[in-house]
Image (cartoon, rainbow, N blue to C red; front, top):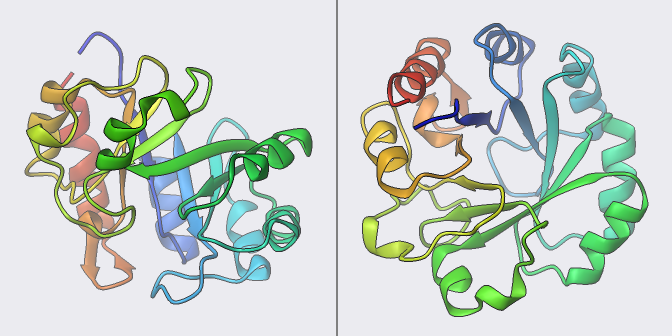
Length: 204
């Protein structure tokens, strides 16, 4: 790949893992606000974590089918710069977030993107997941016969053993990982994070 892929590590919840991600030179760190996940943090907890992140690293709040007023309030309280919508939210929610000054990232399944490519304008940053966003199921070659022309992140069961192959196959703008760098469910492993970053860079 000609350019260094963008790397986002999502589902961080402790100061140590946030600092490790920053030290490893990732482009973005993600914090889950959607209820029901073992990685969920409160806006107050996330505010303490975003305070550790330098301005050149994007901070992303992840939400799923939550009221837009709740999303905006949590995003502002936590200090994230970007909102990632991971459910079936309408396009008007993205418009409202953009109008508020937030950057946005729209997570969709590969199947939905492939079936409805006209829904996704070139300037909409996308995260394309294998089956269902957040499922952790691995991305396969058949999942995305025609990738987006604009900025998009590959997600779905990525880890240090497969990310290089999938980067070369799909040529995304970057990658997003969460469960693939966990020592146990919801708990990031610093060594696993470092190994993933090395694998991404080795694929260039």
